[in-house]
Amino acid sequence: MNQDENPFVVIGRIKPEYFCDRKAESERLIKLLRNGNNVVLKSDRRMGKTGLIQYCFDKPEIKKNYYTFFLDILHTSCLQELVHELGRAIYGQTVSLGHKMALKFAQALKSLNGKMSFDANTGLPEFSLGLGDIEHPELTLEEIFQYLQNASRPCIVAIDEFQQIEKYPEKNVEALLRSHIQRVNNCHFIFAGSQRHLLGMMFESEKRPFYKSADNMDLGPIARDVYMGFMVKMFSDKGKNIENDIAGQVYDLYEGHTFYVQKTLNESFANTGAEGICDRGILLQSLQNILDSNDLHYREMLSNMSIRQKELLYAIAIDGKAMQITSSSFINRHKLLSASSVQAALKKLTAAEMIVEEGKQYRISDRFLRLWILRLLGFPLPL
Ligand SMILES: Nc1ncnc2c1ncn2[C@@H]1O[C@H](COP(=O)(O)OP(=O)(O)O)[C@@H](O)[C@H]1O
Ligand SMILES: [Mg+2]
Image 1: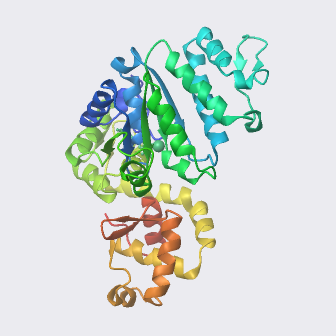
Image 2: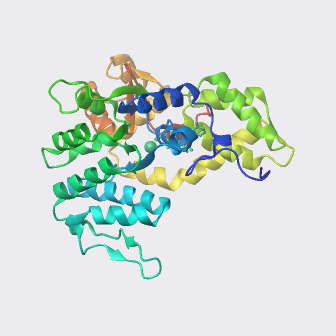
Image 3: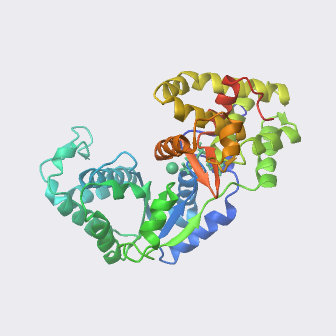
């Protein structure tokens, strides 16, 4: 094991030894898939859906027996783009599995014939298609599913930010996908996403094509004691230490929200010298570093907001979890204009996903942004 390697991974694939917990969740997900179910996987943004899926895909029982594919469709806005992403994800994976499979996939996509170019060195087709090359997305989609159906092993396809298909201008995409998915019996699906209510409506409302077509999994934070144990072990495996109550404070600062915990520990680990101890001083310094590095981005973000939106954002930042935000007590305490101006600002901020509602409470989605605002307003960090 590389002693210098930072064990708190925040970008890309996480090696199993640096992956924290998710024991019950990975067992459940794998069990559902192996028993022929499709799964809807929901959680807040950056809680660990992608990490969990990849962790499961890397497990021997999945890796040895299935072909797995992963695509994120957050940036797509029409069927053509979806088909492009799906094709690219499958092609990328087949190339890593061998020439024969990649060629077979290219051959299966008859509707693209002549549009795939061949790499002069490897002889492999290149999936360097432009979007416009997919002239008949419905036909290409059919060919992709045909390919999956005939694959030599069962397949698992994970589609991240799946709720995006609802925003496509074509009206039939949900029904079209549903009918393909229903017919292909060699392939199971994970539909992941962070917009709970949109995914909920897709899979739980009777009128929708995907109604009750998948089992539900809601990913919460990792348990406090488990995460703290992980932090302590990661430090000590590398010859360093973290004070127990500092580990607890990091967890509590973000209510265990994975990305923010990982990022803070990544920075804190880097700032702790060899054989050193991560204490309150190092944690505070690390937080300042993180907020500094986001400074420009956050300033720009604020510069594009109206004064009413900013006021509401600040009020919510101060409260952390804000309740009854249109009540006169909230409005007076934070010197806001009126209930209707709060309503209007709230609508904009929620639509932009800057604020999330949890139960009857509101909080700022980006937990670093909240800390940055507190610092901007001269409040101490809540540690
Ligand atoms: N179990 C875990 N152990 C360690 N780090 C994790 C774990 N799950 C997620 N992460 C980290 O948290 C961050 C957010 O995870 P990600 O899977 O991208 O979230 P989501 O897909 O829900 O938005 C990533 O930086 C990832 O490296
Ligand atoms: Mg993700």
